Image (cartoon, rainbow, N blue to C red; front, top):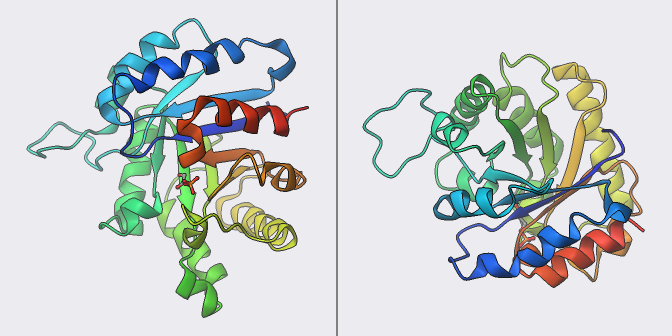
Length: 249
Ligand code: 13P
């Protein structure tokens, strides 16, 4: 398991029924023994979850949702989907704490409730943390990450089903990635924080932010990274496969 590399496709608010067809290439590719270390997870919009579950049924590809409502119970929350509903259709993962949801109101407290609800429903969690550009400029990166971890995982017992995704907000969708030496240091600091505050010895940490076919050769050199959370580049099956091939060769 520790040797596995995660390639998590976050399709965000992209993708219609037609776009599923192109993923057939990825499903076929996922059966190639040479790349058996690659754990591919698709997180499409809610509207495509069921289709994705069906199309990937006979493969090792797993499916996740991009967010969930914090309420464990059904209720009058128009437009919302909670962890229990996600579980009920057979998805195994959920992204929680993505910066695009943090800006629209997800506080660390709300994120904490979402995490607890996802755990109650036995979902694996892709727990996103990351600093904004101004936090980075003001040298607040470590304190921001620390509070995201401490408050987001408050009263959560060390749980092996959490994947930590470090996504610097200034890197998402900008084409800019951290320098390898800085990213390596940051990953090691995050690992220490998780060890100290969350008492998890070998947390899985993945990187997200402008991962592409062009920069993957550089990013993969950081051996402490357990995989990638990929936005834009994951919507193109050829690029997605290319990223996996270039990581595992
Ligand atoms: P991009 O790969 O498009 O920068 O998006 C990263 C991201 O937000 C994945 O969750």
